[in-house]
Image (cartoon, rainbow, N blue to C red; front, side, top):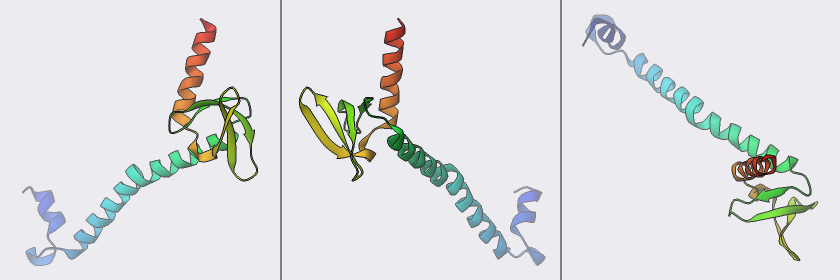
Length: 114
């Protein structure tokens, strides 16, 4: 062990310092919050904003991988999606996949430019 480790771990008279255990635990909780919990909360917020800002007529992809066109935002928090001619499915707004829909939009934009 080097000198810094000994100074941090030992208190007066060479006995272990119990306060260091508390500091170490708080540090671990802080790291978990900033690297795990906070990014997940941010991503969930972005997903919710995305599903609330999708407009009628846009092509979407659901979490299950169903491609369709958003035809109606219902008042009860659901959406109506047309997946084929005369085939309309009612589903939750939260079932829209932000990542897959954005990838589909990019793909469609590059195909129209080419």
